Amino acid sequence: MQIKEENNRFALYNDENQEIGEMTWSDAGESMMIIDHTFVDPTYRGQKLAEKLVLAGVEKARKEHKKIIPLCPFAKKEFDTKPEYGDVLRK
Image (cartoon, rainbow, N blue to C red; front, side, top):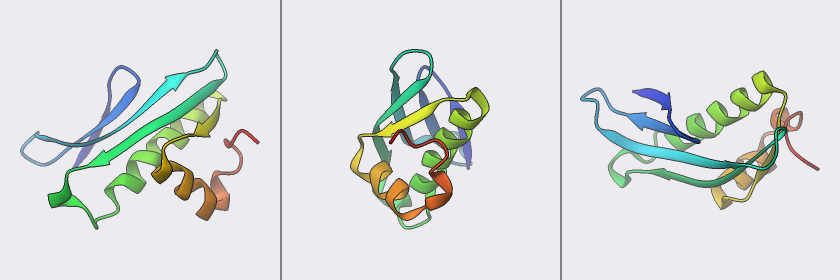
């Protein structure tokens, strides 16, 4: 599995280089990311791949000193259950 950043999204690819998931965001100014969509192909669900996509967004926000608004229901659940993401959560 590989995650690549492409045009305000992280795309997830399987070992055959087929896209199997994505997490998208919108920039809200220079210091804010709004996660608006997370998807993993049903065949690959249950492997914590969506969690890895959200983590990629968290790591990007940390690196770029940004805050995140998790509008996507899945991303919101991740932020609600992972206090370690609190440093990038816009409160």
